[in-house]
Image (spheres, one colour):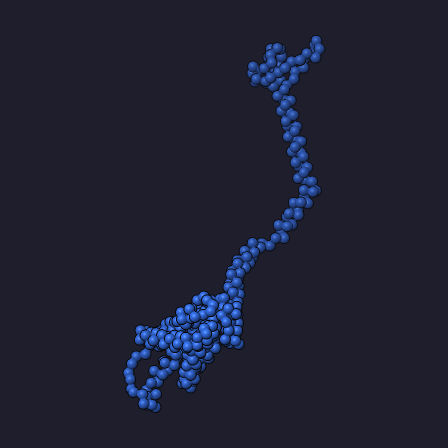
Length: 312
């Protein structure tokens, strides 16, 4: 018997070839005929046939018209996409991110400015009103804003007039009975001291009023609402201070008297506001109200004299 794999002679009853380890099974078909069945060869042939069928199916799928159309559509979509689209979209997204917070800040600033202007106009139209009746008093920033505006505008006006007066002191001394003095005047230092002085005094007056009025008022008012209400009643002072600021910058010589009169007008408005508030406090005893106003003014002017000596 010959091995079909290595063509070597092997015994007729052998099931495995001793040369190549090929497995062989003999079956008798009849008395004179024996068929040799090669299991590994048939198994390998079946596996190759299945692999060929799968590969043929894969090639048919790739070469089919449907597959080509899909790939063509994808290629068209990729071709239509702009080359710099990612850069443009990235820049546009970054621009929107940058514009978003700045736009919100500008809108918030506009709302604050509009609210503050409405706050001033409401008190200019009706300066005498109850603190709880005005809806703008709920925002404590309005009172602080008015305090800062009064301090800044009056500081610039007073410093401008003082600087002009000192620089032309000899000319004024020749026209009047002023003595000839020689002193150094530093405008920025004088302006800084004036600003600190005005900040303290403008806050001190409503604080003293609120301290006296806490026991006499029929309704309790918080500190923030009271400060906003007090400077709301002095909204005309903010307008007057702004006019003094413009006049002192334009021509301090010709408008010096006007600026001084407007400054005195602001002091008068503070005293009027003080008196009206105590009269509105609901205290039936008028004598007590009168002495309360007098006590507040006395304490305030003593504090002003002390601050002038301390700061200047």
